Image (cartoon, rainbow, N blue to C red; front, side, top):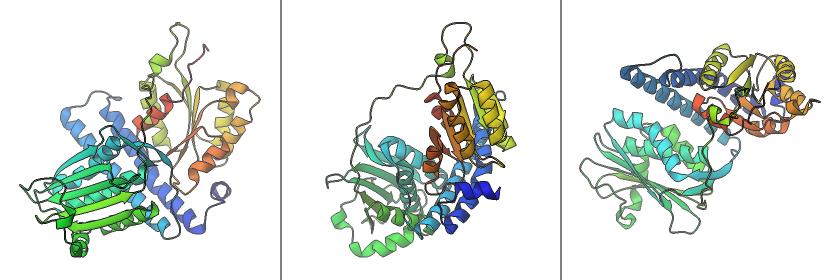
Length: 392
């Protein structure tokens, strides 16, 4: 175990090693809980009642909130030693806002706060790091909820700034019955910034600190003001350009991937992980979705099974005893059988350290998925990669 940890983390500082292992230990069980709740909700193990569905959704929301708290804790620690890695992609604004609202709804319900949003232009996108942008919107919303009186209102406004090439995100909290709209900044006293920050940070001060650090990392500007009606306006301006979304066809289902001939088999997936509970739930879910799933519990076993089975896809965990997932992926890529050497490999990791994704890709992985993840998120990645099966 020591040797394989040193292999994975050889380029990471001592502090990051600790954070990576701490994050892994916290994230791994959450992956199983999230996957089980989604599989139960989707009827993998039989039908569930409406009351049971509500409970499963509550479990899912709670796990996702815990995931966010872990990410915040780790990110705050990392920011103290150096900048985080940003991975820019075309991010749909409506998706960013909806995901952030989903995280904030539990807190809003507890305080009887009404949440709403306004996005301009509709269907627009921005070039940025999706995870960091969502984090910022989440913490703006949480700050607005904490600053709003009970039964008040919080609205998030996302638009292109008057400054060319900037994205403007504003969260406004209002008392009950007040008109929900953008306040006239000229009427907001700049001297109230300290009071606004105190109100916004009274429930989650660590989140507000992380928000300001992330804004600084992006080269943006954060501002807080109290509004004339007793509310609070939190705003972030980021130098990010709007980007058109390319039209991407929806992924094919496993059944649609199959040729029409009767001799075709379902896509064969080799699932490699030493976490028994996670392997069981992922295997059950993917089998329910129409895949042929085989499992391995170690890197050495994965290499042998890949040669014997010639799977359509390999899902490979990074941290395993003996031969780890990075070394196993390297052996698969060096196979003399071209069907094995070119098989798509999805690398799974709960380390979450800086450069973790790059190390997996450098080892030969086709793509990278960080733990914790939901079964639907994994399925979406699979459907974007699996090749049409050939008769076996």
